[in-house]
Length: 178
Image (cartoon, rainbow, N blue to C red):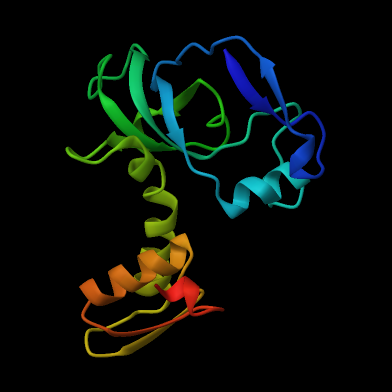
């Protein structure tokens, strides 16, 4: 299978496309045909060796994927081949296939395409954790979202509104606020 591989920590443009063996799922994993993978800031940091997690080289970056299950591990009961899933994985998403822990995967909501699904988990989980667990946002409070045009900013706006906050969005240019 084809994969985008980091052979040495450095600039993103040093990644190479290589043929690597398809992985086999462990007992609690699913093998996923990757239909879409999001590119997040931690992926870029990881490739440069600047993230708190430094996978052994070589590795395939990509921590957030959407795709179709093609095989399941012996202990996996909640998924079967053909199921559409989204998953948070540590690495491996920028490949034609990847492994995902079944417990860190979830069904892709009906009516949601793979591209949207691949961009859902990291941004929304980051915003929810920041607003609820760290910020203790309450209904009626005012939330100012700086960088509102990015994935985390957009999700913070939506979650803040859903939590009953008055939301003020800011971005670096008028174009980004459209």
